[in-house]
Image (cartoon, rainbow, N blue to C red; front, side, top):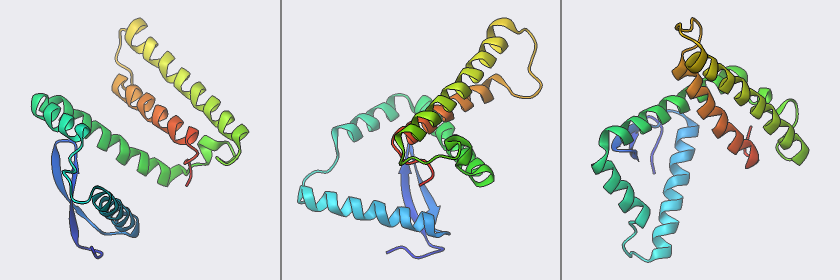
Length: 164
């Protein structure tokens, strides 16, 4: 079992990272992951546990290390930014006062996300197709990142995990 202030090795994308276990959330996530791995290993009774997907991931990481590495870097950056914004704003701005237990509230939240996505797409059109000057407040890449994160948020809301 890993204790606080120790490290454990995690694999994400094309690298392995030493992750400090410095708070209860990381510790709980690690313990949950280890429990799932143990259950899977018991279920497969020691058979080769490398899945076809893992083989494909390994193959593609060797073939396209720059592209897949950049995908992992961008994903990690967006995750970290998402965590910081959730710390600052909380989940209420997406659910509009509702909760994910109520299907009507989920539909309303998804409509709100679609409106935000529409705003971002219109901004992108203005910046890339109609604009010939560099924006002062938000870059084209910032807008792409926002669109990506809103798409993930929509999936979290649809799966009724938002705010949980």
